[in-house]
Length: 91
Image (tube, rainbow, N blue to C red):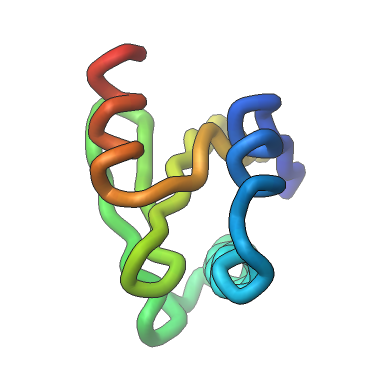
């Protein structure tokens, strides 16, 4: 599996405080484990939002949106529930 960070994801990730960054990293490690093993890790919080766009929870505050096409996972944005909703409306 290949992973790609979009510029919008990278920009928002860099602006997060350290503790929130670590929660995002943990969520992405759990997501990678799901893709590698096929087993859903407890607490991942994976959810389909719109056609081809998925969300994974990174703690109580943050969500990570991504798309998966064949062997490529593209991370679109990281942010709060409201920021994710705004991103999806503007998309």
